[in-house]
Length: 186
Length: 186
Image 1 (spheres, rainbow over the protein chains, first blue to last red):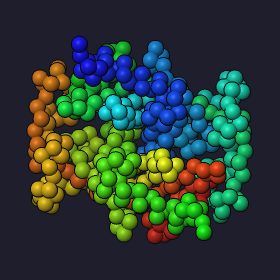
Image 2 (image 1 turned 30 degrees about the vertical axis):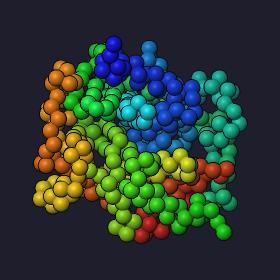
Image 3 (image 1 turned 120 degrees about the vertical axis):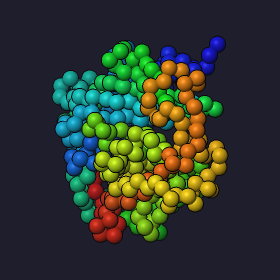
């Protein structure tokens, strides 16, 4: 009987299990991955996001965001992005290469209806994110705006899993071969 | 008496304090930031790194890495990078925009001498990182190679701090004005 990190199937299954846990449990590490994008000045950018969906069958992940955030402008120009999770208990690093589609408009009505007033705080605000303000309280107004709610549909192109153990193991899984996977040097 | 997150000085001081803690304490969140670079295919890449130095006076951070890792090749082409830390207890996101200089060679001799045999495991290995291998144990050899030890000197160009509280506060600190800082919309 091998450990989960000793086989390609085991590693891949653990990756999706951890991502699924992040969607379901707000205290799981995969709840708050880091999303890296290409900034409009050509330099990389990285920030925490909230993972809202993960489907092994579709090979996809879902993130909600403010349509006025810099990441949306960046992804509109360069849809390739990286999503990063470190699972301390498993000593597992998960790296996803994504192609991201930005979704807004009427197809999100049902999702919006299900969001709590607290959750809706994340979509809106005046002025828009990143604009200079004199005072962080007096010069900023919280708004909840349906039109500012956007969904990032991330198509997983590649998964890299790295397990740090007595022996480090690293594997690469590509959409091209159905995520069959291959070992690579750690 | 204001809270640390209510003033620009307080936020900036907390950022450097947390980074310093990451250098000193292997269990601190800032010990393992995420480094985002521009991949050689033009897509962003993100991975965990170990923070080895942080100096507020110099406005710099230091990372050790394997000279044969993809990130070194990427930074040689595009030295601009992003370093990301999430501090859960402080509810503080730290984002650094860096320009990275890759250091190898004799200037690292003293640092190398101070590394434990265990730490030296991270610099070396055959084949080189990312190369295909048939079996993760039989086809990979651990080596400790002085020539594979590299230091990334990150010059901090910009710091963005985001504190999530009852009221979210976000500030931008630029080298251009001595990191005086300015509030921006969260």
